[in-house]
Length: 271
Image 1 (cartoon, rainbow, N blue to C red):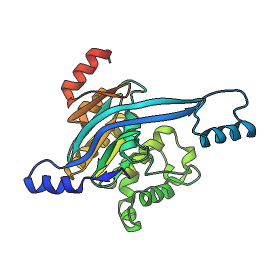
Image 2 (image 1 turned 90 degrees about the horizontal axis):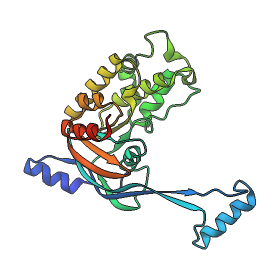
Image 3 (image 1 turned 45 degrees about the vertical axis):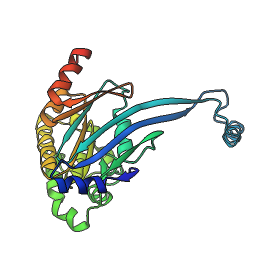
Image 4 (image 1 turned 90 degrees about the vertical axis):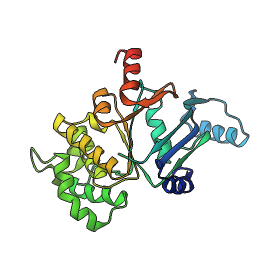
């Protein structure tokens, strides 16, 4: 989970009738450390040398990648926020930090409730059938077995994976990547979330599935949740989000209404 909850801020905001914050990113920096190359790096001797260097506080051959640089923003209950930027801009890294999966090098992430990152919370297994994975994914997100039974058929129907055969009874390793992504989204969307983060899930499937997904995101917002959506489809962002964060090289270039930010992004990048 992220570093700290926003309980005090939430209580004050609720008492004042103000918007309620769900995520606060305060000067967030994320740094990856990557071991450098070198001959014999896979040998036992080389591994021992690296351990000894770490014990001595040395970092020879370790390269730092500053993936997120001083990002600050506040997200509020009921918002759908798009994250845009070119490849490698830090979008997915930022989501992982909000989900509590990556530590911050500097700064803090505060969350109200449990953030759920689509594809991580619903960690599905290739050797199990789709049916068993619906149960596994639901349990991983904190749903009870009774809740899963009640929502099982809706999950299968929403995913659309049975439209051309009884694929739900087959192992997930037999699914296409698109089918797997649709099932993950369907499982995640079956539960109401405090904060739901979706990374390129709407890029899979046909337009009919995308429309269902966008409608479900709007429903999640109405149910007092916050949704973050990473997508390279500006249309999906426009159809789904009321606010956009634009990141480039780990920095937050712009934060504002969807149309305003997308116009600036499209003018700059030609996308």
